[in-house]
Image (cartoon, rainbow, N blue to C red):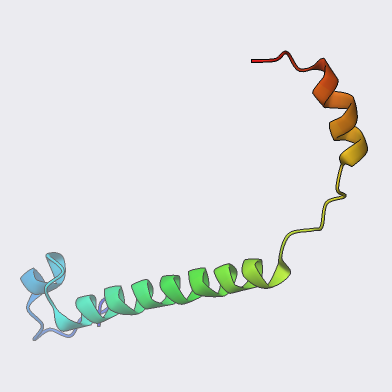
Length: 69
């Protein structure tokens, strides 16, 4: 419809994005984008963050060098 519109289609509607086919395409693209973002978000949340070591020895070495406030 959008690439090769039939002769009886209102070209002005297509040009200004008011034709139902144009609006449907925009809706489908937005939906696809939102679904892909959701999938990425869920994958990131499932991976989680790596566990870091407690760092007590690093803290013990660092704190004496800090000036007191």
